[in-house]
Image (cartoon, rainbow, N blue to C red):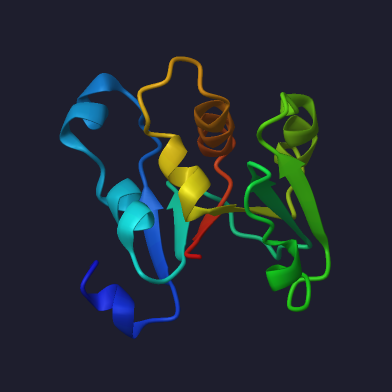
Length: 139
């Protein structure tokens, strides 16, 4: 899959949504591909209900601003800065049915760093719990 990522505009992969210790030790195909692919990766949790997205929520650490790159093609963009503890704002979007999430690869990779109670991990686990699609943007 990683070799083929140079030939495609994006990759769509399903996820199990498991975050247990066994998965951390053995690794996850979807998380590995999302971390290393050349093109953007669209992660789709199991049992997701597909819908027309009206809003794209850009999760960012503040280091990389994706809004200008995305807003021309997707005008209803909202930003959530993951450096802040803004889980309540995220929760409001998670409960809507018309939302897709986007995160840049640099921030996605921070989820898997060995940092207890990482805010990045908390956001990712909530997205999986609510079975929301997540696009990992390749910068």
